[in-house]
Image (cartoon, rainbow over all chains, first blue to last red; front, side, top):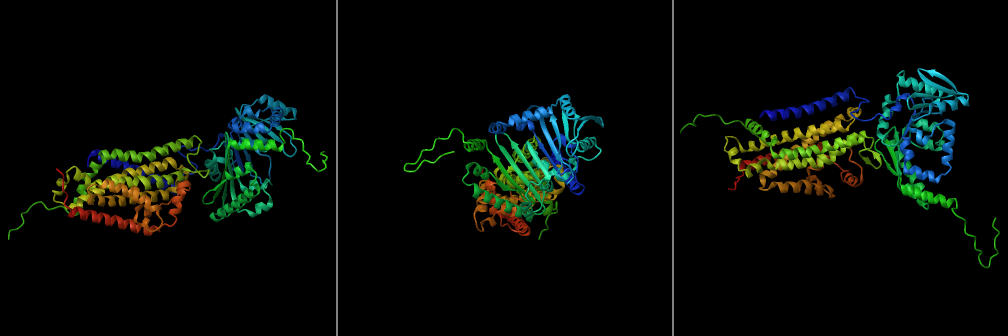
Length: 341
Length: 279
């Protein structure tokens, strides 16, 4: 056997032994949370406490610049006025000032206001001035400027936690976010169960992950429905907003059987929806885009809203509003003309 | 009655195999065929690097039914589609059929058969060299692909399937190699027959309803794969075909049977056949 043959054998066996050895160690010791290149979500997650029940992210810049959003805006002409109103009150122009936001809900089971961490370009003086006008008080908290305003139930606060990053929420939540970032308590990236889902869905420009009880506590799911669906532990949603929307809803349930049951429930709802909306082409197209999937304990429903569908919705809305003047009724011959009010 | 003149003792069968193995391994590793082997095995590594880069840029490298397929899922699909269905049979065909056929074609078989070793040992030694050569190229590449695709946090959970994958690929290389070694020992132009078997018969028989698939290697190999069959379009069709798979022990039995029987008959053929070298 020549020297280079021996060298080749040595390298090949070395790669095998190294790989299998690493895998063996990992399977016994565990390398939780480590990845070679993989992301751990946006940097703003460092402000979100570990015990949060829900966390959501939106790349506001991409969403606002998307064709889909422009088309939607054309459908709702009064949305621009609402945006200006928000800008007047807060000094924040969502379209130009905000790049990304992370929203989270705390561990408390009651549905309180969320904590919002926004990254962008903020006029700190203007925002602080506006809050002072509403009776806001400025204080220093661990080196961060905190502006607190008394609210109906909770005092609200805004803190400029780092250049270009603003935290907004209840005063307690904002203080806790500052503590979390400083390392006084663990952040959400330490929640391996939640972060595993985040890594699966964070390729979209908007996503949300939460414990199902966080959604159920919001009261948006009717009790009758909540009682019929199998026990869900985690619920997540992700979307890619561009010229259209590609979205995915995902539920993690307690067992494979529960996942199969949930798929059957969803199939039933989809069939019922098709039956009831078969004559409506816009919604029928939307329903056709639904894809039920997932494996094991995961159930997923994917959907897509192609750009053409927005045009269909626009034309439907146009018809609904009665675009253009109605043609006068032509009285039928031989019948008395009805009086039209 | 005259006594046999004293001389060097003929080597045993095992030491003959070892000598042929030693000789053939170097020849195989540094032949032109190795470039082909490197290209074939480098493809999945390249794909894995691309998938990793795409994933790191925030875009899902693969989606099935709108659901993002994770690194472990992509790795499982590569084992199914690239390694088991393509790379292993291809290497078996090109290396297995060439074990004897190359010596015949190069007219070097005479030098091997002129040695005081059993002819069967020549084939077994060359087969062992093939197995070591291909396994030591394919298996490390699988490990590299695995570490490129699967996040460290998921390695603990997917380590046992990786070991099973490596074992199955090893068995696949062994069985395909033995089968094509037999074809190489039997036929004068074995490459064409080998290709027809691997990419004609095996593919068609697996899709035909009935018992024909039981006469393929892929049927038993795929029954051992720990990953779920990828669920997408045309591949879902295959999934339905493979729904009734033999038990792992049945598969192992038939694979070992095919391996031993092929090697036995290949060695027997080499022992008995008279190879005519064209002048």
